Length: 461
Ligand code: PMP
View 1 (cartoon, helix red, strand yellow):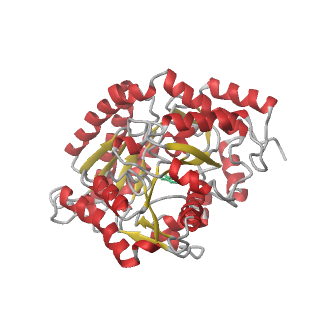
View 2 (cartoon, helix red, strand yellow; view 1 turned 120 degrees about the vertical axis):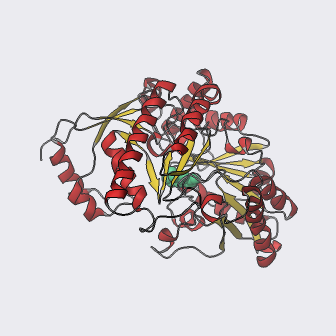
View 3 (cartoon, protein in one colour; view 1 turned 180 degrees about the vertical axis):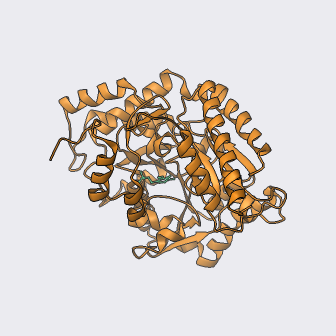
């Protein structure tokens, strides 16, 4: 077999890819026909594909490359750590400096008394840790029946058996025998799609109170925790009404239910603060982290745990752990990533420059005939495509048809914007500049125009 490199013709790479590589969340046969786009390199906020085409990455990879592509400092640290200590585990009463340093740094950055870190290799693994940790917490406190976890429909928490059970995506539950027992789902605070005639404020309260109703129905002595993303990401960048989170916090406090904030997307500056918990003023007992922790340069995730929960878990043996919990290379890379975010004041850039500029440009997209709403929180944003702005109507065509058409235009126009049904979403690298935001918006508008023309031509509008 010839060496497979960036210099191979695209068609050959695609053929090998189709023959041997199974893609996540993909219809394999369809992709094999079409051929996957081969990304060969990236710098800043731009990707380059195997045809030499430059694409602006409106999704920071998968919501993770917060610091932007091509940071040599991270490569240097990874190489140095690999030479010094490429691997050692943190089981059996051992530790190493990268895991110690990263855990201490996270305890410093995390709000309140979130001072303890259990490392994992990904967000999915971390949420599986959380399921076992909250159930073990209550069992160690003498309440083994307190094990139901309440989550939300259209939430996303990962693809492992536990984390996908926490997630509320119907299509995922249809495959592989999910959910696992004792997971309960309530409705999401998605006003645009489900709010009917209520004001967003009324609707936010109503949806939060579904948690209280579920606790009453299941029994407070059986509910261990509530888990939610501060802003739903994969569900379509759903920013809850202002009334939602304060009411959720009140309910968790009133009923002795642990609150898990899944900060896999919202962590590390995405909403303008280190964590979404700070943006929404909530006090989680556990935060799930991954993605922006290392800006995607190395696979690492974890759970940041409160003093109270860690004290109980630490009182017995927690029979749980991953080979790569606190992997030294990934931990060293994450630590360097956090150092750069701080040293370069990237949160300040988000708050004072990038987010306000993006907000102004993004909200102006409501002038486009297809856009029913434009929502933004820090550096994550969504557009609802609609045939009728006044009524927030859905298209007559199957949900997602318009979104997919728009996504195809984005592809052709050199911008990565994702669609979730008929919502278009972005979460660019946090380091994006106003000039680059102009490029992103210009290509997004061109794609919306193309989508509008196609919908008209196909009689879908
Ligand atoms: N939680 C949330 C909120 C996520 O968005 C994701 C990934 N998109 C996960 C968990 C799972 O993380 P991973 O893909 O690293 O397992």
